[in-house]
Structure formats: C-alpha cells, structure tokens
Amino acid sequence: MIQNQWYVILRSKEVKKGKPVGFTRLGENMVAWRLDDDRVVVQSDICPHRGAALHQGKLMDETIQCPFHGFEFDASGACQYIPARGKTVPPPKIFQVKTYPSQERHGYIFIWYGEEQESYPPIPIYEELTSGFDYADYAESWTVHYSRAIENQLDVFHLPFPHRTTIGRGNRVISDGPLVRMVGDEMQIWVYSRKEDGSPARKASELAQPFRPPFLHFRFPHLWQNHISDDFRITVYFTPIDEGNTIMYTRYYQRMVKVPLLGWFIAWLSSIFSIIILHQDKRVVEKQLPIKSDFKMGEKLISADQPIILYRRIRKALQDGKTIQEINAE
Image (tube, rainbow, N blue to C red; front, side, top):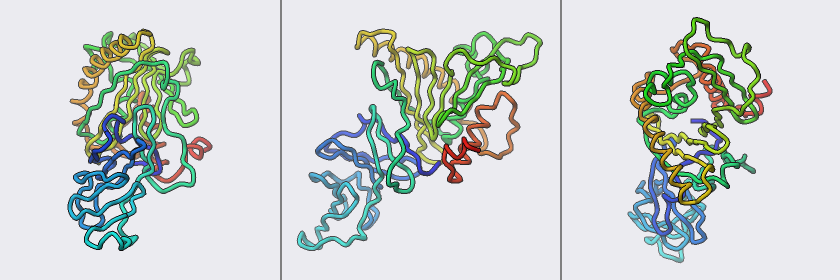
C-alpha cells in the first residue's frame, strides 16, 4: 500500500447508529461506529487488553465496550473505564486503541492511512459529481492485489479480447499512442484504437492534440474515472482488503434524465451492463502472476502500456515517500 494517503474503506450506508461494524482493509482489522452526532469513528478492531474483537462489543453512549472484559474506549481510542478496577480508578494511558483520522464525503467513509499530520490533503473525490447527478452503487471483491485491479482499468488495448462481445466489438486491435499526461494529481488518458489496416501503431508524439476531455482519469492512491460523456461517468475506488484481495466501490453517474427516480433507474440499468463487462475482466485478472505488480518486474511491456508504466513509476515514488508535487517537478 501507499502510505500517507486517503482511502475509501466503506460506504456510509454500511455503518448505522447503535451497531459497530468489523471489517478488514489495508491488511488491518478495523471497526467503525457512529457517535450520537452521526460522526463516524474508525479504529483498530483489537482490544489492547487481551486482543478481543471490539466489533463484537456494544456501544455505550460515546464509547465502544469490549465484549470480553467490558473495557470502554472513546472516539479518540482512550480507555475510559475498566470495570474490574472500578469507576473511580482512572485507566492507565497504555490502554489505547489505534484510531484513524476519518472523513465522510458523498456517501463514502475515508481514512488517513499513515502518519498523523498537522493538516491533511484534500479527499480524493470528483467534486463535479457531488451534485446534479443521479447514481447507483455497486461493490464487489476480487481475489487479486489492488494494483492488478487498477492496472486492468488503465489497460487501453485489451478490449477486443476479453470484451469481444460487449465494449470490444469492432475488432479495434491497433492502439495508437495512447496519450498519457500527469496533470496535477491526476493521470489523464486519451484512447485511440482502430482496426488493423496494415499501418503500424502511431507513437503518442505523432498524435494530434486532443479536442475532447480525457476518456480515463486516475487519482492516487486508488480512484479511477471513466469519462464516457459529460453526462455519464463511472468511478471506482479500488480498496485493498489485504495483499490478495481488493474490494471495488463502483458508482454509475448520469444526468441525462432529470426525473429523480427515473434517473436513478437509468444509472442502475447502466450498472447491470457494466457488471457484465467487469466479470469478463475478472476471470483473466484473478489469474495474473505475480499476484501484484511492481515498478521493476519480469513483464515485457510495449508502447500501448504507457498508462501502466506511468502508474507503476508514480506508485513506486509515492511508496518511497515522495509527494505528487515532487514527482511532477522531476
């Protein structure tokens, strides 16, 4: 994983008042629960006393109670009560549950994964999608490292093969370019595919300047957008569960139809078709070896892999502690 980044870990609707939720993300066991004012708390799911799973406990006003010995921890992770010692005895400070900085935006729960900061960078989200669009949600887990799942969506020339019956129809096997740019904190990709006509694929430097928005967008560490049109988009947060599993929080946006309920139905219908496409990829991606990608590995890449090459280079630099601003300045 890339440290010091915001990650989506759950959809807001998965955490309801009065009931803690246990789950694994980023290779760690976590628990999420809501305070009386509806704020979400995200903590380690391990009681520091004897290692019990806190999500099996219950909420006590503004604390979560361990199911094993009744220790109570507040939203900061500090222990407020140890029943065996009595209410008048302050709990030792060593009884502290790891607590993640968290934010809730646009139906998602984000945590900061890394070192505490005096101020945190903006949440990775497409602000233009937060109003004016109807949307439908879909979430699915794959038995694959999250880097492989991301690279599948950055791969611009595989469509005629796993997707030959859906979005890959037309046998457009030649991939000119593609044109890939890093604009601020975002990878932008323009796709140029055509049928085999006897002429070789053109290099990115031979392509005309794009006259339309990029077809694909990617923001580190794990947000992808398919800009199908100004009125129809697909976004995915590729969230690591652990080293071998990824959950994809997918959302289908539309604003072509303005009637609210009908607009949601159109978005939902689009999700059904997209799930079919997703499953055409799944059977291939889950069998890729090695299970995760890296900047330097045994694969032999070609020019059409430029989005994947750029993704791997920047991911490695971020893992080494560089910032996007430092990478862009190089």
